[in-house]
Image (tube, rainbow, N blue to C red):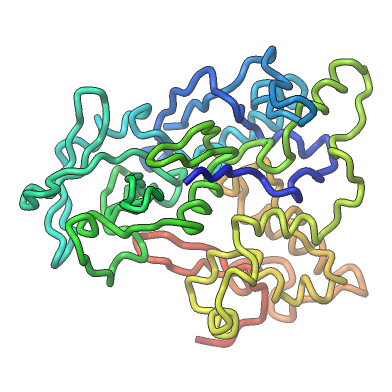
Length: 392
């Protein structure tokens, strides 16, 4: 497979300078590729992402906008750069050998369940992390190459292998890492069975599924055989704003550069929802039955719920993701009180034309209308289908 993973053309239309700080790396070659697995208050350390020198800005094929790297964006957008560094998007893809995961997890053992066995973890001489199933003579261990996820909820492990048809096969490991260095079954793997020695380690993914998996956790990447080339890890500025070389060149030549729009000034609600939904999922990503029945796991796909909400439909379809979320600021740093202020801005009892909650006009909005739904292993997502819910 030679699959170039790029932000879609839609990405190139994000318009305002204030949104430019969605920090990025370089698509060509990071200078500092060292990464550290994230650690939150529950036990996870912030990563140091690879970046590109300012002098590399604009390097690309002739005539095409180029990726410039997160440090270049930081020259003018320092506040957004620093805020986004704490965001889950900024720490969502790791080369495990460039983290301290092997040192942290070596020696741990976890029960994989009936038909799988007990997984043992060891550290290789080069800092690589290995999962082992000692009872499997033909495949007693497997390297863990990548970790996907910020660690706020979980990190899922990925290994790439060459397939018989020369395509790339990904192995999503049966065991994931949860806050506090807790290893446990990956959400969604509870009822799976293994049909081969490789599947004892997890589920195989390939084709578009694998491509999308890597695409949504990186700014740029190219899967070639069992490796990833031109890797710019994490979801950073240019993932959402597009290659920044033309904007940077303009900014360096002018004291008052124009807003960053990369050629289009018609950014609207639909454009934003499509952009966020490119990875957070849109209705076409779900089956008709899932859309109709809206099972609990659908709350992971926030745009799907948002598009069903009366708040969206009755606002003239003007409610958008950034109405409530600053894209540069981690939701983990925003208090419930601040979120409720967003609700009240459209449901203010002092404004006659607003729809007012008859139960409580000043508090309890989130718990009643956007409750956190359990997804197993301690993971919860807030339901973005904002509605008056049936009593359970």
